[in-house]
Image (cartoon, rainbow, N blue to C red):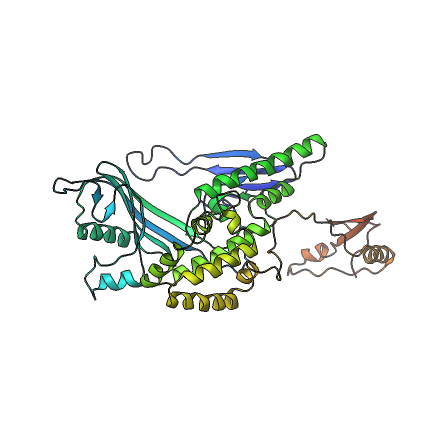
Length: 442
């Protein structure tokens, strides 16, 4: 539903906001037509939008040169396996039941030189395996990040083909998962009243798609900022400023340092999108050769999460990048170096700024009070004086053909400019009779 339709669905004023929440009617299934759409009007000091990456409320920063989002797509199933003919119950196919498997990018389950093999080479997906208990295992075929997205049907077909090739027999599917995660894209626009959070604030890791822990860490910071803003206005008996409250909430999520760290990770997502399956195998082979604090901190990538100190400064990111490139197979390392140069040329300062102090930090969300625009007070005072002194009167032209319009043509618009101290006020008065003390424009 478009949040701006009907008119008045979202209204801001100097004390807060009023929003009209609209429910969707049931359009399918047994409940179709039973309940019509309903609306609820809610008054709030501050709106925090947690409706996801494609929010209808939060505006994106169109000044940001960030690439559009990529998409992580996955098909998963919680399967009960038939293991009657399997002598070793500690394994399911090549996967150890005592361990989780991540990033199985093998493609040998497709016939060589087949269309399926070619598609898996250019639009790679990997298998994720999470054994639960006995013969219950969660399998998920995942496209890490792509633009445009890989289809769900493609992921599901590849999952089934892989399991069949590995001799894993699915007896029953208890649950299915369809995963859609936008990654990267522009940050929220500055100076807006609605506070985005989670996907609506682009908090998803732009290289990995991880989000839950980042949102949990960010929630406390946003709550503190909002609480302090409400408390400070209450204690000082000053007027509550919702614009300042929104800015403080955004600044708690996206500090300049955190934006710089995100920009570094956005490049990672863009590089991964351009890799064929062999490049991704080499990428992750080098990635997991790094010390655990280095790769673990990159996967988390948010202030307060474990090992984030290895990535939250420009120098730490530079050390990580140089160490990582040294671990990569030579073709992937050369490809990454070329990508760094190309990305820096096409996307501007975002990446270089994240690994050097010479270019400063990105613009943050800190509240900046905007003064009242009063214009040139002297010029306006002069205009007022000259209008009052002028004796010139002229018929205001109107576009009517009938004679009755001639009388109406004497109608004038008088503009009265009043200045009080440093402020100015303009009143436009429309009247059918020209007052004696007001003179029409010449």
